[in-house]
Every structure is written in C-alpha cells, then in structure tokens.
Length: 324
Image 1 (cartoon, helix red, strand yellow):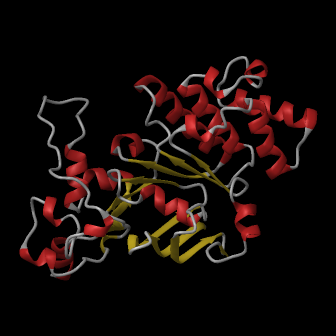
Image 2 (image 1 turned 180 degrees about the vertical axis):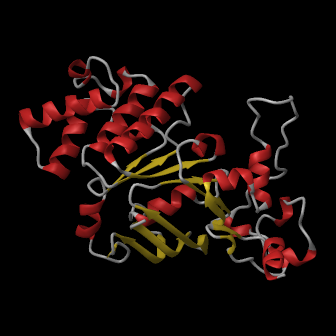
C-alpha cells in the first residue's frame, strides 16, 4: 500500500515557564492511501496532541521534534506557507466539540464558504451552490435554509455534520476525526460513524479516527494503534487486535467493553488513571496499573517489538517471549 503520511520519532515538549514537560515520546505511525487508522486510549494518552503537532496547530510553547511527511513532503520545520497549503486542503481535521469549533456569530453558509474560498477559490453563487451540495452530502435536510442558520440554532448532531461538510470543502486526501461522536447520543453517534464510513468509501480518503472507545473504531478502521502516556504501546490490524491483544493495557480496554451476545458478565475497569506527563513512573508507564507487572517493568521503557507480521507491542513480557 502506498504511504500517504509517515510520522517518525514525533516528540512534543511543553515549556511551562519553570520547567519543560515532554508529553509525546517518539511516536511512529504510517497511514496508507485510502487506509483508516483508529487511534485509541484514555484521555491524556496523547492522541489529539499527536495530530495537532503533526499539523502545526500547537502554540509557541510547544517544541515539536521528529519527522512528519505527507506524500514525501516534510511538514515539520517548514515555512508557514507549506502548512497552510496542507491544512484543510490535503489534510482536514474534525474537532471533538463542534459548539466551540464553529464561530457562533457567523452563519453556517459563511463559514463553509470561507473554507471553499481558501481551498478551492470559489466565491459568490458558486460557493453558495457548493455549500448547499456539501450540506446535502452530509445528510442535512433543507440545506438551502440551513445556510442562513447560526450554530446555536442547530442540534449537536447537525453541527457535527456541518463540521464534516467544512472538512470536505477542500476535498482532502485524509480526514482526521478527533472524538467526532463524544457529545452525541447513541443514535446520532451511529449516524455520524455511518456517514464517515460512507464518505471514506465513496471518496477513497484516508482517515484517522481518534477515540477513547475501542468499540467506536472497531467497524471503522483497518488498523488500530493504542496509545498510553505519550507512546504507542500496541498496533495491529483491527481484527487481529481484538482477537489477540498482546499488551495488558489493550486487554484492559477490551475487558471494559460489554458483550452484545453471550452470558452477562461484570465489566472489569482498569484501576487508577493515566499518569501526568510530569510524573511518569520509571520504566513502563502502565506498570503501576498493570495486573501482570513484574519487577523488571520498572527497569526501562520497553520498545515496540514485532509479535507477528503486522503486529507490534511494547511490553517486557512480549519482548521476552519474542526473544525466546
């Protein structure tokens, strides 16, 4: 599969004035053309920061290192014009809270029209016609009238569809959906996920679906990367990850999912919380919460090792088994 985006050794350090805190510790990720990647983990794992850093959307206090390439073109450290040509046009991002991402004082039509003007040079009647088509494409009824609405006049699910329409305005090669269903009820959530799946199938786009819920990404991703405390701890094809998780954190996330069939069972929560970036434990960051932890887990950070043809995990038990 031809590579679209390649991330290598991505690090992020935040300058807090009195100290510098590292929040990403060398993330490696590859997205192929037309491929869908699920990025999962609890809040604070570094999922959103990874893509904000890759697209140059972090503030001046963030120091980003490593390499990010889009179709062979380097994005990190380049002139602002390079990123401006990429954001929205080549790579579009849907943010998790449409209520704060949309401008409350501008009508929907104006906001979509601005994206069309910036990325495709459309203005006037052409921009209005294309805005109406985009709203219809994402399933918004009475699209012509909705162009004159303000965000507060629309429901959360409709605002999320507007955000998707704005993302599609630039006809991007890849869509990054950051928790696109967090604030929606179950019925609307299913509709949004079906819409994203349909858009990807029809347009051949690559997609990164960021979520804290493995169930959300299960049917919408070809591969899943599991993040914890600023690192990828496991990565595998979706079916293989669900069938044979190799990292204890992935197993813990799966154990917290209810079964749709079979006998009823008590869900098992992972004890504790994700550690703060400034207070990471020695060695494996998951060790204090891990039911399989041993003394050697605190000796050093385990690297990602191959446990199959296309399956990697970062656990000392896995490392020992592979070596044996």
